[in-house]
Image (cartoon, rainbow over all chains, first blue to last red):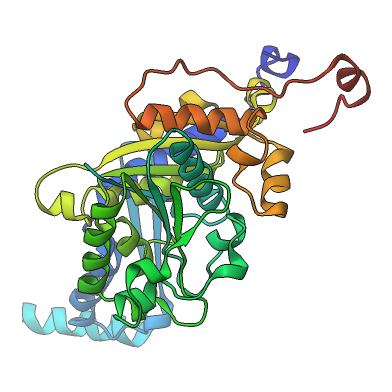
Length: 95
Length: 271
C-alpha cells in the first residue's frame, strides 16, 4: 500500500492484470477460430457485392473486444453510382 | 522411470536456457542422471550457459539423421558426472529435425537417463512444438510482465493439444516458474504479483526466481547458477524447484539475497 493507492490512483500492475484477463478471455474463446473476423468480413462483403460494387480499400473493419461482448464494425463507403443502381433495381423489382 | 521435461515460454529472453541449466544441474546434484537437450536449432546457447561450447562435436541433428550415435554426441559435464548435454546444431535449420527422428532419439534418451530436460526455442512454431512433443512434465517460464504472460497462455494451450500425451487423452503435468521477480516492485504495485500471474494462467507454481545479478554472473562464466553460487537467492529457488519436481514438499519462501550489514548500508540500490 502506497500513498498513490490511498489517493485512488490505480497501480500499473492492477491495470496490467485487468488488460491480461480481458484479452486472454477473448483469445481462449477464439482458439480454433482465430480467423473469425476475416471470415465475417469476406462473407459480409460478398453479400453486399451482390447489390453494389464495393471498393475493397474503402472498407473499414473495426473490432472492439469488450468485457462480455465484442463489437464488430463494418464501415463500407457506397459510391453514389452504385447507390443509384441499387434504387433503380429496387424500383424495377417493385414495378 | 525416465521423465521428459520441457522448459518452454513462447516469449524469448525470459530465462528458458538459464532454467534448463539450473534445474538440470540441481537434479543431477541430487543424484539423478540428467540430460539437457537444446532444441533451439540454429541459435544454440545451452552449450554456452553450461560452459561446454568448446567441446561440441556432434549435435541433435547429427543424431536424428543417423550421422552420429547418441553416446558420441552427448557431452559429459566437467563438474557433475551425472549431467550430460545434447547440443543443438548451429548451422542447420529446424526443418532438418524430423518427427520420427526426434521420437527415436527421445526414446533412446529415456532409456539412459532419469530426467531428460528439453530447452525449447522461443515462439510457438514447429521448433517449440517438437521440443514439447514428448514431454511428461512442462515448466512454463514467465516474467511478471504482460507480453510474457500472454505468450505463456498460448504455450499452455499448445501443451494441452500438440503433445503426444494430449493426443492420447492424457495430460502434461504443467508448472510455472516466475523469473526476474522483484518483490519490492510488486509490493509497490509496479509489477504483476505472483498471485495475479497464477490466477491468470491457472497452473501450479513451481518456483519464484528473484531478479538477481547472480544469473548474469553465472552465464558469464558458463556455469549453471545452481552450481556457480549455490547459496545465492536464484540458486536456492531453483534447488527447491528441483526437489519439488522429484515429489518433495518444500515450503515456498521468497528467496532473498543474504546481505551483510555493510552491504545494506553501502549498496542500498543493488538489484
